[in-house]
Structures are given as structure tokens and as C-alpha cells.
Amino acid sequence: ETGVTQSPTHLIKTRGQQVTLRCSSQSGHNTVSWYQQALGQGPQFIFQYYREEENGRGNFPPRFSGLQFPNYSSELNVNALELDDSALYLCASSLRGTNTEAFFGQGTRLTVV
Amino acid sequence: SQQGEEDPQALSIQEGENATMNCSYKTSINNLQWYRQNSGRGLVHLILIRSNEREKHSGRLRVTLDTSKKSSSLLITASRAADTASYFCATPLTINDYKLSFGAGTTVTVRA
Image (cartoon, rainbow over all chains, first blue to last red; front, side, top):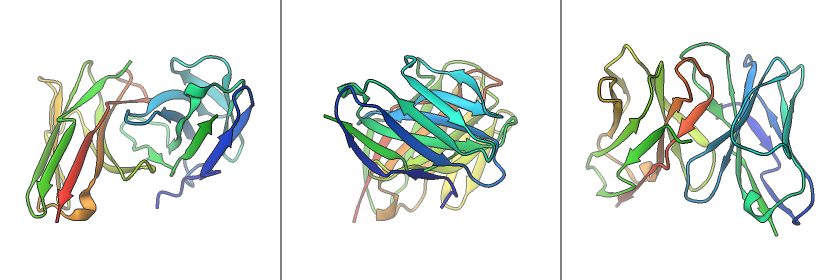
């Protein structure tokens, strides 16, 4: 167990709707990153938060947005859901610094119908 | 864009045999991490190897890193059915980055 928890574990949404996914970081970690993993592929970096500010973004449109709270927990919001947004969404927490491990939660399986 | 690529894509071995998979990456790195994923669940961190290290061990796992060839290998010795999973290598997007780039993974099946 990594201490990184994500909720919910599964979610079904309709195209065009909005969704919020949540992540609680491992104790002592100050950096949260979100990844999208489509079936049969490796995780793709969405964005990272450090001290409540976005600290880098992957190749994802603005309808993917996030928040980090003072307790280092985080949310991923996706607006105007598309069928291709169906994926496993993974949250990773780490301590900012060189050569530190990133620990992942169990993920949220999002299905858009 | 993906930085790392694992090879082979899939591997099937008998219980007790060793499993070796490789990872190649494109740019200079400070470290490389290996992860395991069971049946589409979360990623489990296995090992981190720094760029100044050539080999690292953790239980039945042995990881090597060759920065001149921009490649790494993960060896699982005396495999067990519970080792059946997908294995990913992850490298920083840029050398001082904290964001990770993953390959498509190697799917390992251990037959009883």
C-alpha cells in the first residue's frame, strides 16, 4: 500500500458531462501528478501540481484542469467529456527533489458512454 | 511524447524461470524507475536507479542501467505466478524533471 488514495474507483459518465476525480497524497509528499492510461498503453502525463500551482502540463487540452489543496490532496476535472477520455486515471505523489520515487494510487477507471 | 520503450512487448515463462525485459530511452536522465501493474490497477513502484549507478538489486529484482546506450534492463529471478503483470520503465521528461514518461510496457505471464 502506497498511502495514495483515489476516489472513486470506477465511474461511468455520458459524453458532454463533467467529472471530478480526487486524490489524497502520501503523507509528507508535496507534489501531485496526474496521468491518463488508455487500454493497452503506458500512462501519459497530464499535469503536475506543487504548492498548489500547476508545475508543468502534458499534451492535454484545457478542458483537463486540476487543483491542489493546502493538505496536498488534489482534484482532476475534465469538462465536456469525450468518448476518448475513457481511461484509467492515475494520481502519483512524490517529494519534490531529484531522484525521488513517485508513488501511485490505484486509479479511477472512467468510462464515457 | 514517450521517452522510454520496453522490449519485448510480451513475455511468457514457466514458474521458476527468469524474466528479462529491456527499456530504451532517448534523452539524458538523472534516474530511471521501474513499475509493476497488475490487471489495470495502480502502478507499484519497484526500484529507482540513479544515473551514476550501474546495477541495483531488490529481492528477486535486478536492474541495470547503461547511460552510454540509454538503456536499462529488469531481471526477475525465480519467477512466481504472482509476478504476472505489466512492467513499465519511467524516465523524467527532461533531465531535471519530476514528471515521468512511460513506455507501453512489457506484459509478463508466468505459467504454473
